[in-house]
Length: 154
Length: 396
Ligand SMILES: Nc1ncnc2c1ncn2[C@@H]1O[C@H](COP(=O)(O)OP(=O)(O)O)[C@@H](O)[C@H]1O
Ligand SMILES: [Mg+2]
Ligand SMILES: [Zn+2]
Ligand SMILES: [Zn+2]
Image 1: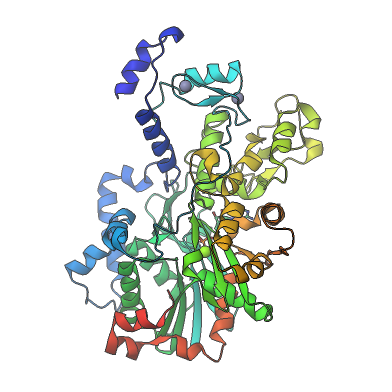
Image 2 (image 1 turned 180 degrees about the vertical axis):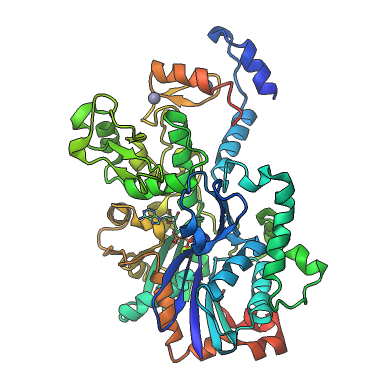
């Protein structure tokens, strides 16, 4: 939200704001998180307020009519609803010995970082002073300023 | 007693009885904007005539099973009368799970398999171990192999020696097919057409037009050329799900290099996207994921193993998982691993005929193995000893 305000007043290219490291890192993290998303649109059922609430119950009732044993208490239900992050924390891997989920992650590459234009995807030689994005030519820099750069909130 | 083999992937379930063929079924539920009252499960995807804007409900998050409500619905469907009609009183199951699976997921799995469905026996195992088993059966003189499994959620590189996985060598790259599709969606949406809601369609585009480059910067140059010289460029005709049921590439001779098409078709023009997207498995740092790509990680993993074993791994590299189907994948892995290893080592990279079902085939073979009965946990075992016996028996 802060970003939006500033983008409006920094139309003049000479006084463009320069994003600090932390902000650039946050942006990258947000971009990478977005690549993990299952969907970008809303659940089609969510726009049916009444039905959306009732539907799961219909589903439930015709599925669980079967011989599903009622061995599961509330605690059991709880365990079936944890997300990845919660499960990972529960494993307490930072204090565990031997190879595990965290240690198995590939190390950073020893090869040099490669750079591509944030607009067209071709190899790039220049870096946007304001946000650190890469660009390959004046035209792409223009597009970048108009569409993303300081305006972008993902 | 029959055995059901289920490679329970985050994208598709590879499932079939050990004496029958394998089926590949979406391991998720769907909602469609055209049938707003229904949730479609697994193979019911076929009932959706217009999958534009298809909404996915996935049981997995980052490759780990977290949404059991959805997983149960899918399994009820797979095991039930619509599909495999499992007679639980006479069936064992071989089921896969990811490397370093979390304890609570493993326990939930035991409970659901034994207490809820009441399978007579179960074997929980990593898909890669089944692949290694398949490989050793066919190449019985080999002592070691290194399995690359590049699926929906991530890519694993796992060394196996005499059938046992070497845990210290396991390496995970957090790039899988889901990330590739989402990235392709992102760059197409920014550069030409808003397709952020079209996961289904763009995933198909990815599978139809992307390839692994053998000479990345050369392809970048070609992809910038104008007109006919640009041999990388493709025009992809998007499906409208009425006249055009499935997207396709315009044949080269029908391509219009200069202007727009007169026909009403909706076209995506793809150039560097075709190879820059799969490139992320080879250079995750291109999009800011600071991890080694497949060849570098593979060589790094082998170099950390005992020296006398190393040559055996380099000559038994096995590629599995859906992403390895990109044209050029095998050749690129070979080329880079070759260039990173001492010249007196042999390098051999094997791409099985069906890299998606290779581990299922391994599961089928395993269930026919004389030792199989020793490997499973029976329901009696479980009822007597609980989770402990599973932990003891399974190499997981
Ligand atoms: N022909 C293909 N070319 C490229 N990618 C493919 C192809 N076929 C499947 N895939 C991708 O492979 C991934 C699924 O691979 P798979 O090994 O079945 O994963 P999982 O075991 O995690 O379910 C998906 O992201 C899918 O888009
Ligand atoms: Mg898999
Ligand atoms: Zn550019
Ligand atoms: Zn910028």
